[in-house]
Length: 251
Image (cartoon, rainbow, N blue to C red):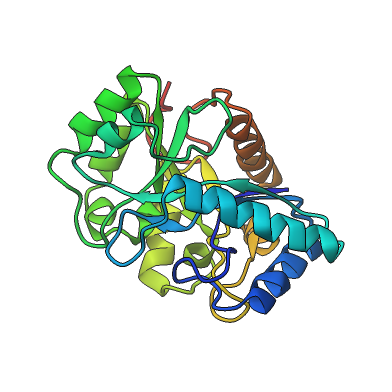
């Protein structure tokens, strides 16, 4: 499996505080069948500032340690970028890390309660220049949860959404899980990431969430999510459609 959202690098953000904890996270990930991890420290948000070169160096250093410890995981550089008015300027200046080698997909995080008024304009600008924004954990955003039509509108213009495992597994409470279920049933979720932060409350639980989704929905749905992750990592295109009950399929 590939995990397209993980805070496994030590001492960069609200992820692990120590190298030992990062190694333990990697061991847990490998044990559940994850062989590739996109390292996505928070960037452009308050106290967390993890520019491109810093992340590249951190990934190289931790990869060396994984190899020395014979942990069979390959790491890749990425960022969880907080949305901002100058995000496209940062892209033009080659300051951000994409999640694919083709520089097509960006993980974009929103504030917890709102979305900026410029969101659709920014996304259209990115999409018109061949860049696909991936909205990270929209189920945890209060505005999206209460205005599913707005999330659907962004999906229609080409944005994608990535639900994170802790949301579906109950780490953030029953309401966030309900939000996630509604978004899944409306075809608004195309990807799953572990959003692993530690070995305690927010562990890497990608295999577990896939198992739960297979039971609650179908194995075919889970396979599609896994295939989407592989396709996006390779820079390919995925279909946006309703997998389950809900509105008419998105073309």
